[in-house]
Amino acid sequence: MAVTPHSSEHEFRLPFVALLTATLGCGPVVVPASNLSSGATFAAHQVHNGFVIDRLQGGGSGVVESARWMNWPGSPQFRVRAEKATLGDLWLISPAHVEVQESAVPRRAGDVEPSWNDGAIRLTLRPATGGPLRSSVFTRIGGGSGYSVLSRNAQTLLDVRGTYRAEILDASNRRVGWWEVHIAEPFEPRLFEGTVPEVSPAMEAGMTLALNSEIDWIEDHALDVYRGTSGGHLHERSSGGR
Image 1 (cartoon, rainbow, N blue to C red):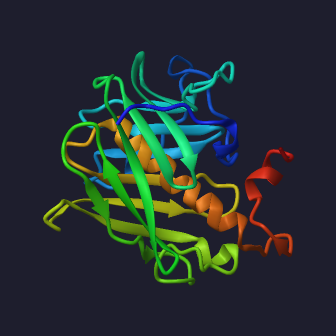
Image 2 (cartoon, rainbow, N blue to C red; image 1 turned 30 degrees about the vertical axis):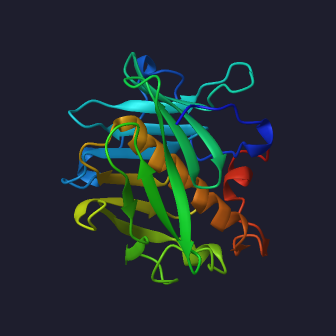
């Protein structure tokens, strides 16, 4: 599948939670290892206009940052980097749908595609190389008192808080990994972690971006109990608005 240009009408923002350090060389804040699952081979937390990657397969850290100094047609919205190496580019086409161009496979793109089961999201990963993978729904495994799954049926922001985990399945419906998101209290960054063997860090970053944008959609359509009106724009209030 070739990378195709996407118009600006399909661009979706990431919420503001903390300030992203401009480059890895300036020392971005990394989540302590004690806060991460020992079984996770990838972990990232949300920052202003992107993510800090706290753990990469094989070690090290990285960032998912804005790729656009100028909005050229077809240019990627986000770039995935590890130290000084570029791992890939990402296009957020619509909520939870991300196109991934891996630097190691320049002529073939992959993507992360969403589907919903009664409002509960599932993700399908189609990497540039290898067979497709799919997730189960994201089931609540801790925190919060809302729905048992991450769902667009959430009524208030309180329904969304908690930790959710999905199993990652191969084409034969065998479990090959897992993916998890921790949606914290207001103004705290979301934490994403998991393990998906034989999937590139760029694809894992694409899955993080896709799931994050779905949570944005859910919160934007839920009642913000912290100000008493519809629309969960906590990130806008923390940054003083858009």
